[in-house]
Image (tube, rainbow, N blue to C red; front, side, top):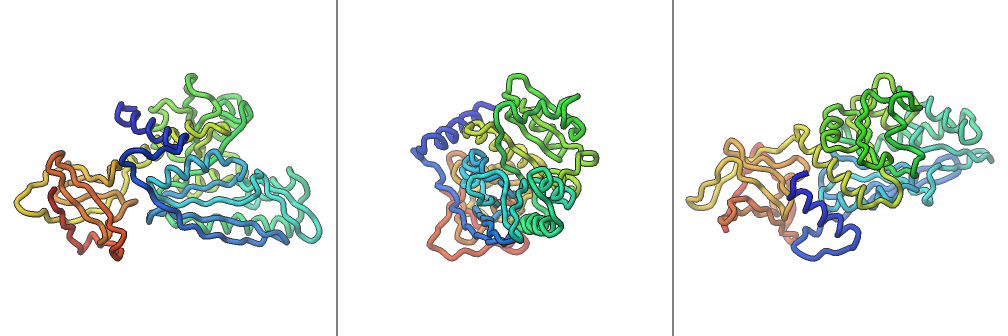
Length: 351
């Protein structure tokens, strides 16, 4: 990690742990949350869908309600980067219990994305019946329906207990070794802090950053009904970020690094035509910022802005004469309409 990025990470983690917002820090996106009341047999389960900003191609999902360290860190990141967060309200419990025809059933919500997985988790955690399998399978399909079509990445938020689950679980000779196509282990890292991904390019990037990373074998991994296997079978880019419970700062550092790596994976951009005030010139490779967040650059005479931050007509763009970078500001009092890169020209003032 370069020194500037390291400093930014330390500042953000400090804010995360202390609640400090001193200095010119972007106040962040406020979530717009919708609650879905899903009837599971005779039990109602709440699913919360929170939209941060306007981008929904980065989908964060928490299936185990007792793994809240991951959610605390992810919310802080979403406030800055934007994205979609899906969570299940299960009274801070891992497994979900429901009543059906005067019987109680229990299942792991990360084992419900195939009928085979549903059968297995119901059997392992108590009783099973054909109507119960149908109910849980419908619940899994409802969750999948909440993931937008063709997401850039699905990022699963998980935590574990010391020594119970780690990168060692996937190394040669271990119980999950058949699920791994490759494993990158760093002895300087806590083995309980790890990434698992279906994407080989992301695996390579995270391994180069010296994290513990598992590349799932999408063809041969056990068909256990997990979301990672579901995504791997369908070519959906998936990442699981996992640390021990309570390691909020470590989780934030890891998920920040993962997001930075994802942004480097041929991140799609929106290319806008622009005109510059007066006789000023704007050279190629000039960078575009919103606060301290880099959003794009000038390339081949156009503004290339990351697709996760489209431009709206209540935004103003200025060339800072001192540092020669373009800065974006937002006027919340003005109506908001998304600009079309195909037809709209961006006016850039000078300061």
